[in-house]
Image 1: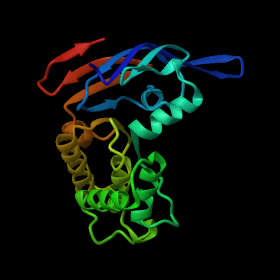
Image 2: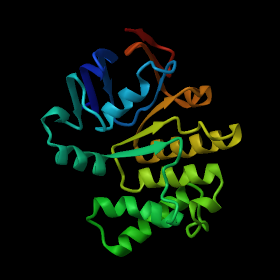
Image 3: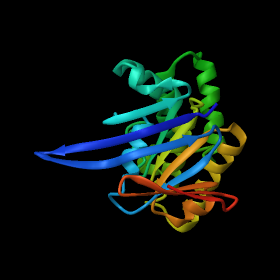
Image 4: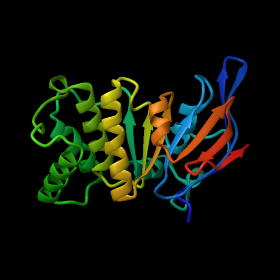
Length: 235
């Protein structure tokens, strides 16, 4: 079964009396375990599409099915619960809580989900921090970390609750080339070892070289769908 299905998804924003279409009819199926990037020029609809997938915004029309659940049938509380338990987010600005340590930032995410003892949470947080290369830095606050280290904390925070899907919006935008590659390698390792599905929104060609599927979005439509084997589907 597909992890994610979008059928005829549109999004129209109202600016005064003017309607601005951001998505014009998106059809998309994403399987479990994909490592996929969405790319296109500014204003093409990439971020809007990511927001729809992440239950952060609702489509004007069309259907989104995530893990067998039709999102349009869920209440606001139901959407929040689905998002909290099943979707991790990684942002270009990291969005870490500055007064919390790396450990506490990651622990906060798993506390929101619940269902684990204090010991289990501690072990999980320490393990994921080690997995992303932050062993020994647990007690540092964001202001004491480099950009690459902050992004690793953000990755750990997204993955600690073992989500079905991780959405990354321009995750390498504030990183240099070497750090970008290191961060991408961490995410690829998590994808391969845990089977977590990753979807990126990016302008960065480095991200696209790592992706096994590349979706080009222009004017609110998917115009190209290219697989790692070179197969390409025009829309």
